[in-house]
Every structure is written in C-alpha cells, then in structure tokens.
Image (cartoon, rainbow over all chains, first blue to last red; front, side, top):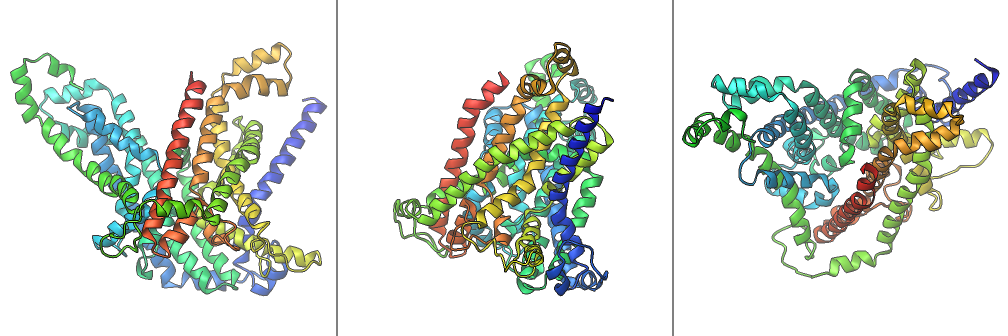
Length: 276
Length: 307
C-alpha cells in the first residue's frame, strides 16, 4: 500500500468516526443518563457517571405499568402480524393462482392503498372505531393497521407466489388436492422468506406506531409503550434520569431484535418503504 | 390463470372440476377477508374524509351542518397551515441537499464488504430502527436547556441557559437535525445495495483507461445507481408529508405554532378540538398532495430512470 493510500484511508476512517459519534452520542447519553442523578446530568450529561446508580432502572423495571405497556404493544404487534400474514397471503394466493372475472380490477383496487399516507383517513377512522365500540381495545389498533399493511403485503406475496414452480401445483392438482389445501400444505411452507420479510416489516411498524394508538386508545390499561413513554415523560418532566432509563429499556429490545433479524429488517424496511 | 392441466380437459369436465376442486370455494373464502378489511378501514374512511370535509361537525350525531367549501377556505387562509406547508417543503429541501448527499458520501465510503464497513453500516442504520417517538424524546433531552445535554454544555462553556426548542428561529432547525439523524442511514442503505450491484468490470475498465477515483464515481457509479437515487428522493418527499411522531415529543408544534407539519396541524386543529369536518378537509388536502406527488414523480422520473 502506498503512502497516499494510507493517508486517504486514515482520513476516510476519521470521517466515518466523526459521523458515527454524531449518531451514537445521543443514544449513549441516554443510556448513561439512566445511571446518573439529576444534578449530575445537569453538569455532566455526556460523560460516564461518577457513580453507577441502578435505582432508576430498577424503578422502571419494578413498575407494573411499564411491563403492561410492553405487553400491550407485543399483543397488538403479534396480532397485526398474524392477521396480515393470513389474510394477505390468502388473498395474494387467489390473485396469483386464479383468474376470474374482475380479478385484475380487484387487484388494482387493493393496490390503491399504496398511494396515500395513513394520516389522511385518521379522523373518519377514529369515528368508525368509536361507532363500532372498539375504542380502548386491541382491535382498534390491530384491524386498521392490518388493513393498511394489506396493499404492500398482497403485492409482495403475489409476486413471490407467482414465481413458485407451476409443476408442483399441477402434480398436486391431479392427485386431487384442491386450491385451499394446496395453499396450506405447499404455498405457505414454501414462502417462509417472504412471510418473514413482511412479518418483520409489519411488526416493526406496529411496535413503533404512535399516531393510531394515540387516537384510538385513551385508557392507560391498553396503552402501547410509545403512549406510556409520553405519559411517563409528562409526569416526570424534570426527572430526566427516570425518563432516560425508560427510553433505554424500550430501545434495547428493539436493537437486540434488529441485530437478530437484521437480514429481514433491512429487506423489509428498504424494500417495503413504499409506504413511507 | 388457468393451469395447463385444465386446458387439456373438455369444458364440461373443467366445469365440474372447478366446482369440486374448490376453485370457487377458494375465491369465496380466501379473498373476502382482505377485501372487507381493506374496504372498511382504508377506502371507506378515505371516502368519508371527503364527505365530512363539507360539514362543520364535532363527531357526535350525524353531520348535518353543511358548510360547502368553508373548511377548505379557512385552512388555505390559515397562517399556521402556511407554516406547516412551508416546514414540509423545508424538510424536503434539507433531505435533498444535506441528507441525500451525506448518505451518498457514506455509501461510497463503506459499500465494499469488509468487517469494518459492516460495523459502520450497522451504526449508521441504527437510528432508523428506533421508534420516532423515542428518537424525539432522546433529542429533546439533548436540546433541553434546563436539565439536558445543552444545559450541560452551555454550563461548561460558562454561557447562560440556551433553549433551542423554544426559540422560534431555531426550533425547526433542531427538528430537521433530528430528521437527518434518523433517516440518512435509510437512504445510505438504498445506495449501498445499488452500489454493490454495479458490475466491477465497468469500474475497472474506467480505471484502466486512466479515470481517477472521483471520475469513476461521477461518470460510472452515480449514473449506474440513478434509479436508486430517484427512489430514495421519492421516499424523502413522501416521508416529509407524513412527519408527525418526531415533532410531538420535541416541540408539539410550538413555540407559537412555528414547527407544525401537515399531520401535526391535522392532529392539533382537527382531532384534539374535535373539528372533524375541518380535520377531514386537511386530510383531503394531504391526500391530494401525496397522490399528485406520486403520479407526477412516476411520470417524470421513474420511467426515464428505468428506461
């Protein structure tokens, strides 16, 4: 390696490290802040704590409300994933396998959902959820979330299903296997990669969703964690250490989940970001 | 589609099999759930938005106070709405002139598959996977002039209290910093994926002909990933139309309504005050904006970039 190469490579690394510290510093300050007293945060917000005080993290972890918020988010996210996968895959299977009068038109109709942001319909959605008596239930979040994920899910599923080998279906068909059974026995098991990608995408969207739960959930018993976190912040305005401990404990699982499912997340989020 | 096995059979047999092999059943069982959910929770509310927007309605009883286009008139003449639209435009501009070039620069520096690059890629993508509300809270701690990082730094430098988020001139700049911080990694990932699929021999051919590194980037790599740039700009624009979660923990639209975006405007003036008709009209305007952008963009860029 020549001298010019070396200098250039060092400059490259230096620049990358500067950007990385801009990215990491706020997160690091958040994690460390949870160990500091408020007086210390005020004078030393960025550095290591003088004393690693775990009582603030302990206070959050022993608060049943914290676990309830996470539990609610988990139930809602899993519900949305399961419903989107089943309902979306079933419809995509019909669109991929069976042509009937109007099927192409129906497919275009479903794709209309890709065109506009969720917020455009939020007010009528609130009225509708209220009028059918679902306010403050998990369904108030699960059903609209699923409905808004369906367009993208059906588009991705249909593309994938259409690429599965046709011979397989014909063989099963001659052996007397019908469409619905074929779907359960063969299509779904063969589609694990796309199911995982769409599932991860829906899960992350649901886990992080704020606007919809904010509008349709008013009771603290059903709050998801972003609502709980905002509530908590409102109650402890000046006690940053408690809020920071709360934030840290909620972003850690997200980071662990990301590291574990990295492949599907990057595919699902960059590929699926058509919805923004 | 009809399967090959089907086409070989006479029509009467085909008919009978269609009924017994469950083709009709499949259509009748597997399609309706998706269609019903989609219609009921997506298309119907969208249509209702348009309908409600002609009424002055608080959401109780049936909408009866028909006001025609008055809601639209009030929105379009509302100074706060002008600010909200202006802020949305600002986000688009910052995305195009700061965020995307930064993302491109980083992508060019780390697109090659090495262990160090993988670590940087991971770090830069990290903010994107955080919930927007969490990102907003983290940064509201950073900007807090009383108890947060800003207070600590200002104190260390011997300055008085600095309140960035309650300064009308600076609050939105702070918000745009957070947006760049949160989303540049996403754009970078799009570019990296595209750069990795540029054929290596094209780059080497240019090198052999004596092209310098910058020339290779300018004349080989960037033209090759143009479709990815077009797509990422599209995400930036559509994303700007939807900014909401980040604003709520940071400024909640204040100080004196300077930091609203279209969606926070809709939420603040439509939902929290139960002006369902007014808020629906904002929704319709947002819808028209999003669809216009999508259609125009597709017309102008997408086809040319792919063709």
